[in-house]
Length: 206
Image (tube, rainbow, N blue to C red; front, top):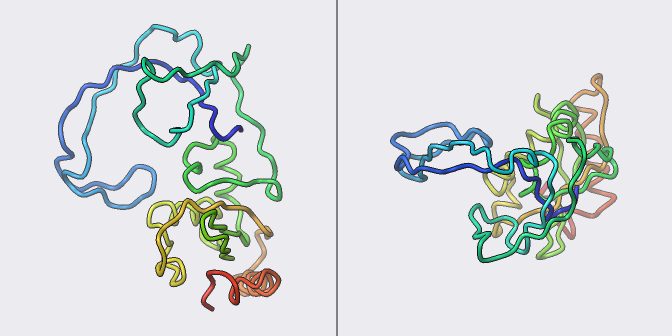
């Protein structure tokens, strides 16, 4: 899945309802959104260009993380028009490389694979070149752990709390089967920390 290509899913009108009236659970991260911290909109699907939904890919440009962009001022070139809709195939655990900012836009099949798998992962900071080795042992697997980093910027880790949050690059070092215990995962995590010197030259603090 190319990093800055965006799939066209349709045209919508957005009508402002007003500020969030009360605290609620964030629908993606699971954290708490405070009342007044964001606006609510009523969306209505339009029929124009609906025949291209799920088929048309465009180049979103340098501001690909921005929620709002002016298409009438900044052209969005067409990259590809497909005959049928289909998700990009999962590249495999060893080949997967993502930025934290991308994890909520990956295909559903990728999310399913990552949320059902436990293992050892690597966070790499593109700004400082530092690395952090971590372990995903929870019920939501690798994806659940990465979502914690995306929501908080540090995932509760001491070394990451001590620095400015970054859009870490995430990759998988090793996966485990369903029979693996927490002790097994801890041993693997320790081994990878030693291999990559992530205590001595990285962000691990234990």
